[in-house]
Amino acid sequence: MNKSTIRILVLDDDSFMLKLLGHMLAGLGFTSVTTCDNGAAALECFSTHVNPPNLILLDLQMPEMDGIEFVRKLVEHNYTGNLILVSGEDERVLKMAEKLIQAHRITVLGHLNKPVLLARLTELMEKSVHMHAAPQSTMHAYSADELRTAIDAGELVNHYQPKVAVTTGAIVGVETLVRWRHPVDGMVFPDQFIDIAEDHGLIDDLTRVVLQGALAQSKAWQQAGLRLRVAVNVSMHNLSSVAFADFVAGAASAAGVAPQDIVLEVTESQLMLDQRAPLEVLTRLRLKRFRLSIDDFGTGHSSLTQLRDIPFDELKIDQSFVRGAWHDDTARAIYDASLNLGKQLGMTVVAEGVEDRDDWDFVRRTKCDLAQGFFIGRPMPAADLPGWIELWNARMLQLQADLP
Image (cartoon, rainbow, N blue to C red; front, top):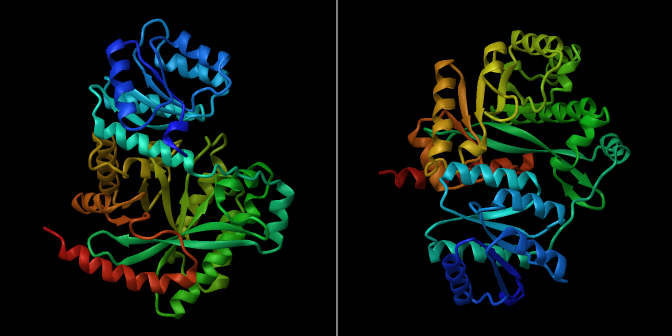
């Protein structure tokens, strides 16, 4: 999309800031810019203009109608564009505001601290141009019947994301991530069908297919001389049946895989109303020597209560507290607390979401045990893992050569 076709609204109660941002935007080549000094006037753009703005630079701290109230009004007007926040508030307030706006399903490209720096504005405006230029894809809504057919037809396939030891870089395990190989739509990611499975009583069948596939692959890797701990995600719905522990144990035995080589990752995305069955299942699995991991630690209901009540072996620090924590004081504080807690409890600690070299250097400096993320390797078919290992080993030699 051409810069001139991006319709921009700048909303700030400071007339000097309005002139400054207007001038800076014009200098960057953005010519369709409207400025307003109050929320009520800005909302008129949605009532009187055929083509309302598709990007808003929004000041949070304004009299009469503050930025948060203005966002609520945007939702009422069915706003589908993007926002850039402009504020002198501290980082924690800005991040809280971003979370709220994203909960309203409005995309926040980032924020500008006052006084606004041209370099940062340029960065965010380039991001806006790229987003407007990209084709807007809509996620297909699948039915429970379609998913049931996919499970029965063997259309679910496993991909595997490597988990490596931070100190040596050696691969020690993989996380199993299911994909739906749709005959028409191609590869469908789990965020488009896991909720359907949980809401329509299909999650047990889905988990059993994923687990059996992961066990078969674990055995194949062992026979090829590659001993890895294979992790499989388990839904709280799976744990509501006391028969689940016997199924897992029976499936591992049939595949010839030792329980110690299987990690069951549990994310408590919903509160356990009746804790008896899940606690029984997890305790029995632990007694059978399966390894238990608390996934996405620090989010949802995955918390200190679970660490107290369930004998987890592994703690996975959620990616939101790992990615960029090297320069984010709040994320760093939560990361440090989670890492220290896991180590004090004798658990293996995994840093999720290691996306770039800075993240990798950070988890190495903080002596986390294991790491996974796109910097290390994306989820891949099992057949691609040997080739990835060769490439990763070569990268590790270079990474270690670069160490200070």
